[in-house]
Length: 194
Image 1: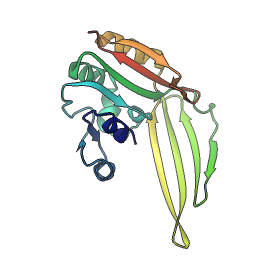
Image 2: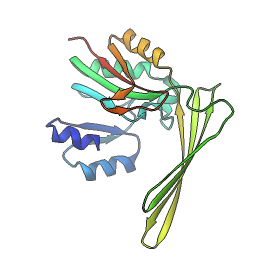
Image 3: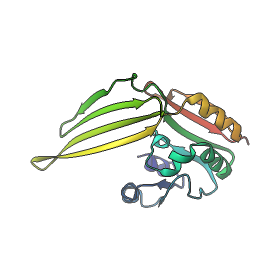
């Protein structure tokens, strides 16, 4: 868990998530961090040295603020919270995740679990829907869960331009260190000038 890594490196952590269940889980795993339920687009970000949004969290469309306003306002909000020299690290999915008119299917299997997925992109809307069915062994039986994830797909060059308009110096990456990102997945390090 990213929060644990930051705490172990002696950073103070303030986490935001729109899901009460995810915040409760985070509080159990890292009680010494501060967590709040809320929209990243609405919550006041305290003055800080860094802001991170790792694992395509900015793509998700379950937050009405993201659906209606996009990321420009968020970039300004983060810029204002960062100290001079501070960094904003995040990653997003871009268009072209699934060929036009195709439903991409995949699966993963472990000792006591299995996950099936189906992805379909709506080119006109710039979105993708992922349907996920998971099976997890609980005692002698398996529990089935289903989820649907709706995400907005962002053009990395457009995001870089928006970050620069706000005042950031931007570097786009295809990996986090040795961890390579999948095709169409881009990471950003946006630094506020010192």
